[in-house]
Amino acid sequence: MKKLYVIKIGGNIIDNPLALEQFLTDFAAIEGYKILVHGGGKVATDISKGLGIEAQMVDGRRVTDAETLKIVTMVYAGFINKNVVAQLQAKSCNAIGLTGADANLIKSHKRAVKTVDYGFVGDVDEVNSAILKMLIENNLTPIIAPITHNKAGVLLNTNADTVASTIAVAMSQVFDVELVYCFELKGVLRDFEDKNSVINEIDTTYYAQLKADGIVSKGMIPKLDNAFDAIKAGVSAVRICQADDLLQLLNEGEKLGTTLS
Image 1 (cartoon, rainbow, N blue to C red):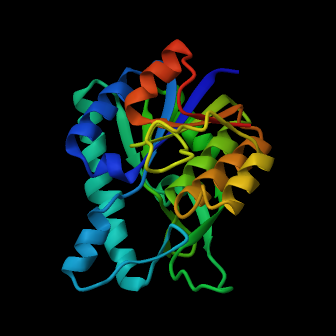
Image 2 (image 1 turned 180 degrees about the horizontal axis):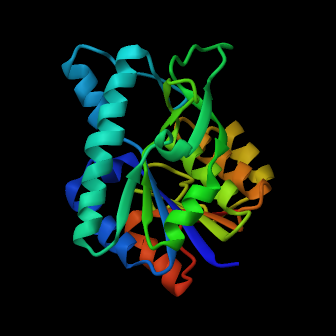
């Protein structure tokens, strides 16, 4: 099977114009099939505050009421997505910006209320892998914002790490898929104050221990949960790395970042 990279870029890179520009230069230079998934960084939070709407986060996930849904849709699917697409076009990467509603790409359902009501937050039911396959085989690079839909006219805010993971799993049926989470750190850290304390390899047993010890917490938990789900479902490799290391990691086979097994 042909190689496909599903790459998710973290919010802190999106928030930094220079870091984003460098990442997109590197992303454009990746040869072969690739898909980019992005979130929204602090832009949606800042706009919400400006409108008097305070962002609510639980375990690294955004609670999305009706007004917040409007904001994240405008920011993620509009401003950020099209800015990324435009920059990639300038770098000779023929990008196409999409949400889950476009071409029925990602169908989801509103998360059931258990201990927390997340509002208009979607959990993915299905990825239209045939559409993505058609696009990439026609030399288009999908740039996907984490706004999904329920096939009944309702948009839903969906965790970008989850979107990347479920796309990787769906595409692993027809491609050899490697899922890469890129953000501002060098990998999963043992000590957050020591930016060089990268944990090079984590398996499920070690992951449970890291969570119990509080070494892995907050937003890193959903990222790793999705990563391990992807491995169980057939994705060939999952790595978490610093955005600056992406090309070196993929082209030179360097042992950088954190590999999950």
